[in-house]
Length: 189
Image 1 (cartoon, rainbow, N blue to C red):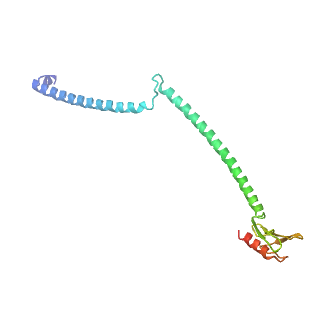
Image 2 (cartoon, rainbow, N blue to C red):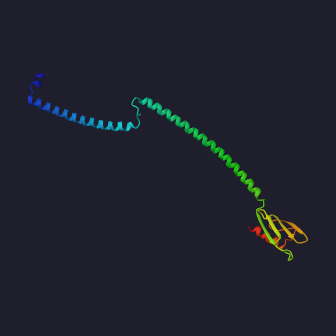
Image 3 (cartoon, rainbow, N blue to C red):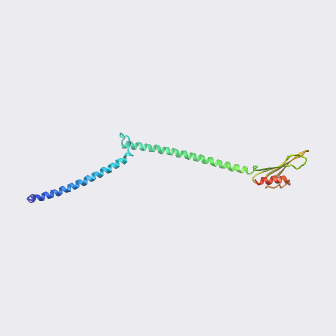
């Protein structure tokens, strides 16, 4: 059998060798194209990695990751401190707002009974006295409760009258014309 292989036509050897050589050339070209694609891909990866790698050529990747981890921990600690301060300030502000609201409520409650409506009418009931020296003053709270003060001045004497007002009326005393006028002006404010 060995003699059969050796006795083949040399042209057949040449054709087989040419086919093998052509296959090897094609495989080499495919490998060359594959290597070029790998080089291009590696170049792109290197460009992207430059953003993550340290500018210091002496620092290795492990040192860079340790530094990065340390920096992240510091930022997280500072963030927690800031959040704690914000929460503390929020609590303090919430307490201040609550105190202010209570104070506003109490002030408004007290102000309902404070004098809020005031009017004054000046008049002259006597011909012999010059100027409008007489007056009627109405002093009322939010509910039209309060007093009307009437002061009458004459050459002989000066008189003052105070009359209680409840819900815009005087239940115990009759009001003079000037007192009614002062009361109506005050209630319409």
